[in-house]
Image (tube, rainbow, N blue to C red; front, side):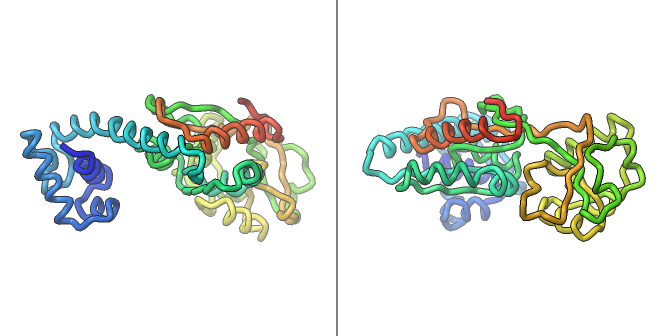
Length: 297
């Protein structure tokens, strides 16, 4: 049984097909098939159902045992590379587009000044996808919306983002400093998709307070929603820190009682943290504590 066989097996389970696993592993599909056959001969069990490409019960047991092992091997490899001070330091970071745009720039700037030889690789995905990549050892650190509720991951709360009502400057409500949620029944809303963490949080809040907004548009993009709000198409609820000086045509209005969006760092329990990852986290905590977003460390 080789590590390469286990990596190929893991790739099939996680991608759901031999072809996708071959693409991930940069191998041919026949090569992946031969590795799985060898693994099945050695274990004495059929591990992958050839019709569905899903693991059999024996395959599921092997997957659960193999994943921590492969992550530990990767941690050892990275630890030994990190031991050599002459090696350029790489940090594999996962986060959302929104966090990359509105939270990370000053943190990345400070990190690059402290580690000019470092190479930062940022992967932009939703929270659930980032959590899976951290679990598999493909990312060193994730900056996500909490909670993720995975026992193999450590969570560290960094900040809580305030949600506010956003309108165009031409809107009738633009002059208000604060407004109650139940006073917005006649407005047209542009909402974040329910598949996003913030969109789901807002809809849960609406249901809990008996508020049924008239929704004209759903989008997964803060930038799309901001543009359409600025055009006067409707109003929206967005994190306050996504409205910047460049959004001169937008106005934010406080709505008492809105939930806050928890942003935090995640890493796999027991995984080796490179010097670059440790430094980035230190800077992240310091910068977050100095922000205007009610940071908690």
